[in-house]
Each structure stands twice: as C-alpha cells, then as structure tokens.
Image (tube, rainbow, N blue to C red; front, top):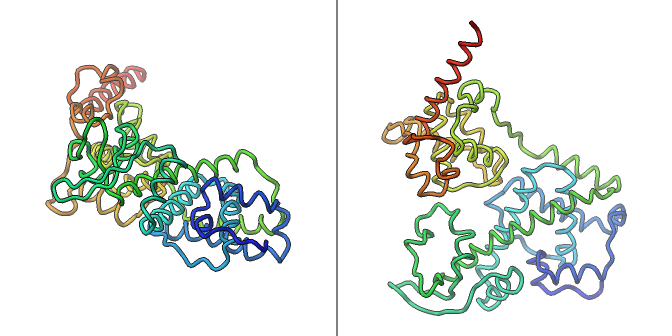
Length: 354
C-alpha cells in the first residue's frame, strides 16, 4: 500500500478506475478481521451511518487516508447489501450520489464532461452559449435529458421551459452535475444489488457491524392494513394502483404523481398520517416535509382548501394514465371511477349475502 491512489479515485470511488486500482491489492473480506484493516472498516461503517443520518443532506468529509477512503466504498456496499434492507440500499445510493454531486460542483468542467460521457455514456457536448442572460455550457440529447429531468419537480426542468436547438437541450454546468447525480445513484444501487445477489460469507467482525447497522435503520411502516380497510384498493383505478405500488416499493415519483395519489387517498377517507406513511419507504423521506404537504392537500394548512385528484385528462397529459384509459371506461376523474367501482362491489357483496 505504498502508492496512494489519486485523489479523484478516493473522492469518486464509483469510477471504473477505482475498481481497477483496488484489484491490485487483492482485498478479501476475511482480511477485515485483522486489526490492521480496522481504519477501512471504520470508514465503511461511517459511510453507511452518514447515509442513514443524512440521506439527501449528506456532506463530503475530509479525506485523511486515500487508500482507506477508496477501499471503504466497496466494503460499505457489502455491509449495506448484507442487511437485506431495500430502504437502506436506496438511501446509501442517494447519499453517495449527493456527496459526489457536491464535490463535482467544484471540479473543472472538463472533468465533469469526461465523467458524463466516458463513464456514463451520456449524450452531452460542450456548447457555450448565453441565452436570456443564462450562460449555458453544454448541450444534451433529448433522450438523455428527459431520462432524469422528467422526474424533477421544479418547472425549470420541464422541456417547455428549456432552450432546445436541433434536438439538443442546453444545460448549465450545475445542471449537468445534477443530472449526473441520478446516474451515480443508479450505479451505486446496482452495485449494492449485485453484492446482495452474491451473498458473501462475512467474518464475525463484519457480521457484528451489519447487526449494528440494522439497529440504526429507522422503523418505517406503511399502514397498509388501515389504508386497505378504508379505501378498498380493489376499487382503485389502474393509475392509482400503479403510483401506490411504486411508492410503497420505495421508488421516487414525480411531484404531480405524489399530489395525485395523496389527493385521491384523502378523498377516499384515508387519514393524513396514513398517507404520510406510504412515503416512508423513499430514500429521501423527510417526515416533516411529507406531513406538511399532505396536510396542505387535505385542507388542514394554508388556504384550508381540500384538493381533489387531477382529472383523467391531466393524468394522461402527465403520462400517468394506464393504457390511455382503456381499462376504466367513460370516466372523467379517478374518484368517479372509484365511486362507481365501489358501488359495484357493494352491490355484489350485498347480493352474495342474500
């Protein structure tokens, strides 16, 4: 270990060069039972702890030992995978990506461009232009831009608000870094999933750390039994079943989809705290923010207006309608479908009881 890795590898351990560098050392999991490797194990556990406690607020830290910093990443991946906790896997990937985003914002633009193109295969080119007082540094192909930007809540990311020229979208330097963050998050999550499938045998010191990490994971329970008893999911329209399934599976959905499912459930009698619970599986879950937003939709805050779900037309416009409404029949909004289906179910249940 006499030759230290370049600082870039220690800062960005997801780079392919990082794996190549570490392979020369031939690390094995059994070695981490040796006290000589304790600094690497401690750093790996600290990475996981940073993810649990910080999530989207995770911050970079000072790198004192580049080898330990670099080696701690794949070890942390193994520890996370060994917990078998899907929420932790997503939160770890989110935290690592957020830290990388903050570091990349201070890097030379050439380095950022190289990571985007070479490492992630993104269709991005250098294109310096000033339009409307905004200094753009790059352009991206539509497909690559929309892959991530379509999920963002901020209207500035919507294609209608972008400068598009000959099928390419102009982006600022910080915007390219934000788009890169999603690719990094995907890569880290994939590494965790691969480690989980391999199921390596861990030495006792690592097993102890896995158990300690499990004890730090916050309890997250979706109140499915209560929701199902109140709202009768068998009567939900396909669009709401789809959004709900993605949320309880821990996926991130668009702001519009979040509003649609929350307003729908609240109008079917589900309590605000139960609606909040379905967001608890998300890696960026913040209970205070989620509760405020749900209570606002419920008319408990702000203007005290209770919101109704978007119309079927708006659901289609936002790409949330399933099979263009073929499964729903002539309805104008999800609530109309639900109430009609609920009447059919109750009539059927009543008939069966005769």
